[in-house]
Image 1: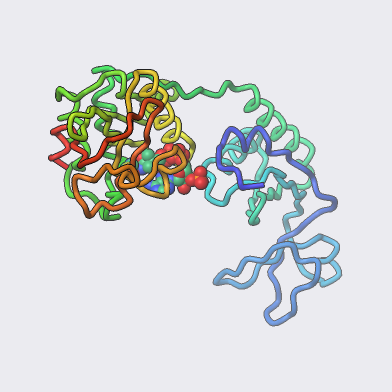
Image 2: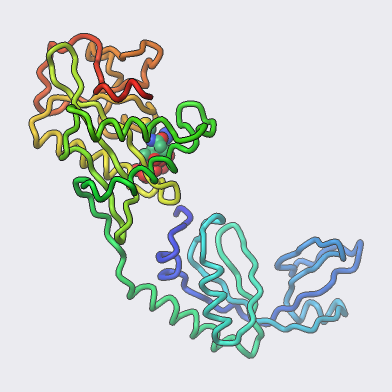
Length: 314
Ligand SMILES: CC(C)(COP(=O)(O)OP(=O)(O)OC[C@H]1O[C@@H](n2cnc3c(N)ncnc32)[C@H](O)[C@@H]1OP(=O)(O)O)[C@@H](O)C(=O)NCCC(=O)NCCS
């Protein structure tokens, strides 16, 4: 099972479980080999701290002051998940329970004062139950309106702050923002094919397809496509591309061309455009210039693709 990152899912599924026994933190004597029962160790400037069962510390004759119960959150949390520690830390703090956290590769482990263990388990169970009851916002896909424009420019500027083409930070406003401003005013703008993804009232993604041509054949040019950076890799981009394809098919469009990653777009059916005899405006684009023939693809479309005029700003 892959590691979970979504905070609400983590809280809902955290399944706090109490390990048997009591645990203590001790200062480990320099040079003494670690005992088999050592559960965790942290090297500090002052020496090595070891967490181990209380009985093991007693048999080694080591001093300790804090006796803990050990609670494991059984959910498989990603090490780069955001907010889980803060959420259970706050719930326990509100209940006046202190909490020392150890993170393993798979789980978080909470060491709370042993007498507080029953109450800590209750607090964590309540936190988990609350999160299961919360409604999840659903992703809405709808046509963009003029009122969305500022939010779209801001999210496109964020998404392209590092150029996907060069991997370098954009100097000033990313070129994609200027292209979009131009597209919204251009004759090639098709309002139904400019789609925003909205989550809990926030515009978190946008995609636009505009009129393009090969000779006299009308096709679509897709792009820019952008998802707000903190929500990338959660399916928003895929939802926008799939919505664009569905809308284009429903509108009787013939095919969609784009310049984009050959790692990303083939999952939606895009192939190198040259396979269909459709050539990129710039030969150097190679397989990055891709095409999706739609249900009404006419065949016999050969030549160089011409984008809407504002793309010359890119
Ligand atoms: C590219 C972008 C639109 C994708 O949207 P997203 O919501 O992050 O992507 P999704 O969650 O729908 O898809 C995630 C999958 O696509 C892959 N993916 C995402 N961006 C990718 C990229 N630039 N190149 C290759 N693969 C990519 C992920 O690895 C992941 O693959 P997996 O499902 O096999 O794990 C978004 O990351 C973005 O805005 N990037 C910055 C701007 C940009 O590059 N726009 C596109 C220019 S062509």
